[in-house]
Image (tube, helix red, strand yellow):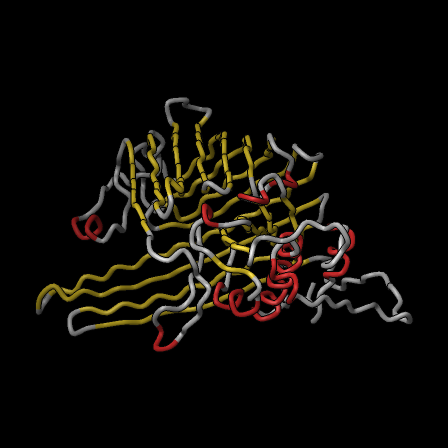
Length: 428
């Protein structure tokens, strides 16, 4: 889909089944197609789209649109992304819908990805634009494949393995305080249809100095290391099985080293092929958990290995009315069933009426499994700097916001001068 010209002739002939001046054709009464672009969880350069696709009117609200373009994406095994564009007909086009996909490669530049998205948008809009007066000014081109071009099997010297690494740091200071931090990460993955392998490791070290008075300086150091591994096997359109592992070292959690892992089983109520639009998954995992503590715990332990299991139910929905994400996770130590934790998370973006959107985010947790708490407790400095996790029975957070936009229904013009009034990025 990165060709310089489009295959619009195929859509006009196969999908529409008509030509612009076909005999007996219904006369177009719509001057130009009104399109609402709805990008959820996918990068959209709206300025670029408006510059490249000028045969439609871009509108700010779906109620003004003839076509609602719902865009979603998910990562591919090769390090690229699969973009799914659902074209939903509204008003005169109610009842019509199409879905097109574009897959980027891990070596594609942002320019190539944008051009691929534009190409796919143009292809999907042709069916609807052909019913408007703008069709008289559209020109269709087709680039045929070279006759001598031979199809050869694809050889991958990396055997589908993809690696990513990063390293960074920061430093800042004032007269009475200074801080330094370094971080790094390494990830490797091999994703095919029957098998998925992901390995990730990351670490961060920070050191801060605070001069409390002429004779006293407080030094705060924290280190956090983590590693995660997943091996998942596909068992059809709804089931998957695998092994989950994680390792970490955390000053805040009083863990010099922690290792958890075991087998897992997941069921998706919807086919995995619909994962960019909707998912309802049930995951169960069980296995041993080994902990080596920095300081003796409130249970007089410096090392222990315990059986543990986890159940997680997750719902993700992305629809024209908005999006919904929620999950319920419960973990429990099998040696003492009273040692458990339950967390509920929910997030919603809901279009209420024209121009008005409601955003809700929140989580609540019941915590009864803090076996890692230090017997020595935390100093005043550690509490203020959140260096040590404190004992608690619960945690919660919530956020609510409304956004309302009014004025002109059109959103066609791009003007990047002096950094103001530019395009919009749609993130949900």
